[in-house]
Image (cartoon, rainbow, N blue to C red; front, side, top):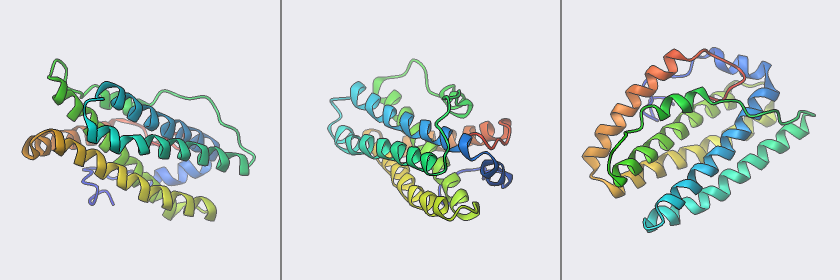
Amino acid sequence: MATILRLELPTDPRWVNLAEMRLEDILTDHAYCEQKAASTCISLIQRYPDKTLLVEKLAPIVTEEWAHFRMVLRELKKRGLTLGRQRKDEYVAALREFLCKGTSRDEALIDQLLMAGLIEARSCERFKLLSEGIADTELSVFYRRLMESEAGHYALFLKLARTYMPKDKVRQRWLEWLGYEAQVIQTLDVRGDRMH
């Protein structure tokens, strides 16, 4: 899966077992990830209302990500678990450090789209691991469905980037993002209470 998504470094296999031991924490973190994904799409639409295709493609993603947030809340409730507090997302904070500074408006957009695509790719990979490795059958099916959705989002963000900038430039910057993300993954502890 990491190869298909072009991720340079697969998730440490221990992560699934650690996540399974901290189900309330991982579901809480997942819920907030879905909420932030919806917010990211809203923010991109607000910043780039003149990019008609972007607005048309991201508007339904906002609805979908918010629906995923509500689905995770239902999974928590089914198990008698509660939504905990949001924690700082060290992974996303580290990725933000790689965003180009002082570039043109279009270049900034491309970087934001590529970062969003990368987050979706990593989420997709982790959902696949959960769908295959978690003992809870219902959650296994749940994460399988979400994995397919995240794969579609990943592809959409990259497609949008290629719409607004030459493909060779997007490809070069994507390779840089992939290399950087692998370094970030290596520096983070393997934790079962975080989706990333």
